Length: 319
Ligand code: SF4
Image (tube, rainbow, N blue to C red; front, side, top):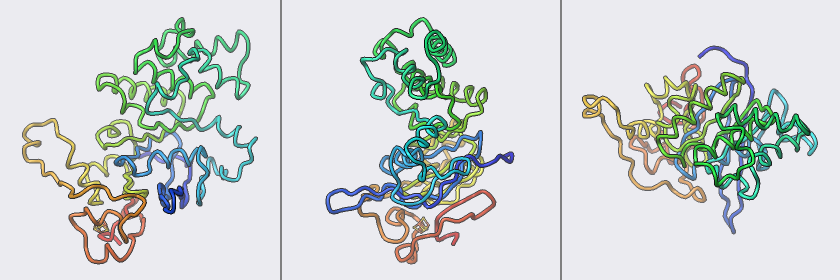
C-alpha cells in the first residue's frame, strides 16, 4: 500500500460496561492506526466489540481507558465545545437506516439538522446545500420534503450518508451499513461510498460481520474476537496469507466462485459457540475453539505484535 499519513491513532483503548455484578469487556485493549484516505475494514461475529470500538473512537461512548488521537489531538481530553467542533470531522453511518432516521422529520429536516448544529448554512443556502447533498448521493433533490418511510431501504441508507456528509467530515465509521440491505442493493451502496471517498478524500472504518463483505472496499482489514483485535493486515496479505487461526477459519467459510477451486476448498469448522464476553476464557480468548491451541494458550494472553511489516497478530504461534 502507498505510504499515507496517519489520521487516527488508537492506543490501548478499553470500553467496559457494568452489567449487574459483572463487567462486560466489550473493547479490551485495542491499539492500531488508520491512515488518511484509507478504508479499514473491521470484521467479527456479533458481540465481538466492533461497533462499540467505533462508537468509543467517536466518543459517543466514554472510554474506560486508553487514547484516541485524531490528527494528533487526544479526543478524550476535549471539553464539550471542543468535542462539538471535533464531531464535524468524525461521523457515523448506521446499520439500520430506518431506525436511525426520525420518521417524523422530512429528509430536508434530517439533513438540515446537521447543518444547523454546526451553523453551516441558513436560508436559501441551506436549501441549496440540502439539494446538493441529495444529488451527491444520487437521490432526487425534489424529494427533500418526503419522509423516510417514502423511500426504499437503499435510499434510506443514502439519506443517512447525506446526513453524515453534510458537515464535511474527514472520517466516517460505517457501522454495518449494508448488512440490513438486499444483496442487490449492497453493491450500489458500497460503490457510492467508494465514489464519495475518492471525490472527498474520506477515510472510512467499515464494520461488517463477515470477511466477504469488506473484501473489495478495504485497503486493510482487522479481525476482532471477544473484544480484542486478533489480526490486522493489508487486505491482500490477510486474504492470501492469514496468520491467525480465527482468520483462517473465517476465510475458509467463504465460498469461492470457481467450482474447481471450491470443490477442493478446505473448511475449518469451529467447534462450540463464542464464549460470553462477560466471562472470556483465560489466556487467548480464542483457545476454546482454536484447532491449534497449545498448553501455553490457556496460561498466557498472546501479545499483539507486528509479525511481518504491516501485518499484526495476537497468537502464541508468533510470540
Ligand atoms: Fe490458537 Fe493459541 Fe494462537 Fe490462541 S494463541 S489463536 S489458542 S494457537
